[in-house]
Image: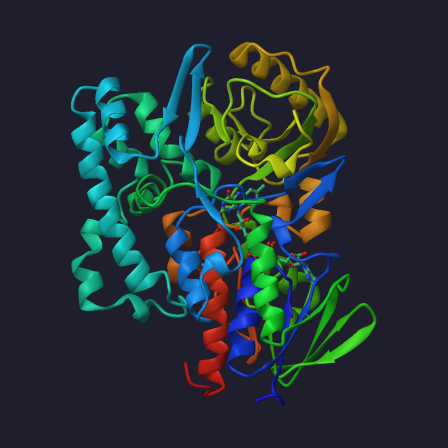
Length: 494
Ligand SMILES: Cc1cc2nc3c(=O)[nH]c(=O)nc-3n(C[C@H](O)[C@H](O)[C@H](O)COP(=O)(O)OP(=O)(O)OC[C@H]3O[C@@H](n4cnc5c(N)ncnc54)[C@H](O)[C@@H]3O)c2cc1C
């Protein structure tokens, strides 16, 4: 098998997963990464004693990480330690309207009941349905490559199609259970942050609420990057070679088959290629037109998930009033999501997300200080300039002061911003998207861009623009699925 050379383009979660699965099966695997470090959108940086995860901060669906490491007879604890957060996260609905989401389920039921009579029982019912969806999704279709509709034509799936609520919107599903707008927002935010609105997302995605509320919100001590480091360590132990600062600029195809790829002036022969870099970029920029599965117009017609405006701030004092994860939902969330999906524009009154990992972990900021990550989900493809970023920075400072009573403007000892142009420059992200494609019904499962090229025999795609979708757990699943497709096509036992 060592004569079978696999080139993986990109060292994000999906590329790392593909590389390890194939190396374990005996392939000769090389990962070519554009940037100088692995992790892709989940890279980290440290400055002046502050350490920041650059992308994901929510460790949800721990079972998916366990399943991934189990492929190699490992457990996550071989590489990093997890801590369950309690409260899982905090909401601000107004100055004195703070709601903490406890980790204990009975306390959450009480919280819902206090907000709306009967909502406690409704939550139990809502999450029972969500558990069913999660179980069916995980066991029957999330771990499918989505190559063909036929993968989903199975008696047990057809009989459960109504219970999965593929055709109902998440919004109407929520309204059937809860009258309180506040409670609905508390259940809606994972959808918004991971690429969709309650109105355009199928109710099936309440499975994410099960993943969040029942399976818990966790923190890998040291930061999300610990997961990347663990995966790289595992990959190296399996024989994967990593070559950094090597953006692939050409995929050479002859007679409908990849023969080699070119990166940094070097040519690498390939038995097959798995592209985990953004699908749109690979197709439109690395391949001759006749070998592209999808035309430009296809990509233009896709609903992308949001981009993000992010600030990484080092604060020279301890902050009060915020938790490890804090969401400012004091402004109208539906207006903000309209500005992302309906009429793409910078939001007038954005909802804000703060991640302050120094609340849990003293290693990520100097003593007595905090590392503050602030994120505003925004429409992809917007004009991104310093002036706009600064305008939103002032909004953040004002809202932080208004809601928590603290003026932090004089306490910022480190500041870096990040938005569309950075996503494009760093990851070749189409329109500066942060999380790939939105989870709409028409972009689910076999309706997503295919993992296997339609035109090039030995070219595969993985990552957040193909199945199963955006997020770290889906990226792990995607990488595993792409590797298994290669193995199947090459007749190597799966
Ligand atoms: C700000 C932000 C917050 C997020 N929050 C969460 C969260 O809390 N929880 C969660 O589960 N998910 C979250 N996500 C989503 C999650 O991080 C992504 O879905 C996941 O990391 C994507 O992994 P990937 O492998 O598909 O792509 P990427 O991480 O983008 O990896 C692709 C890699 O390909 C490389 N590349 C690109 N072009 C080339 C080329 N020509 N040659 C070689 N290499 C190339 C890139 O440099 C990159 O390293 C967040 C994402 C962002 C951006």
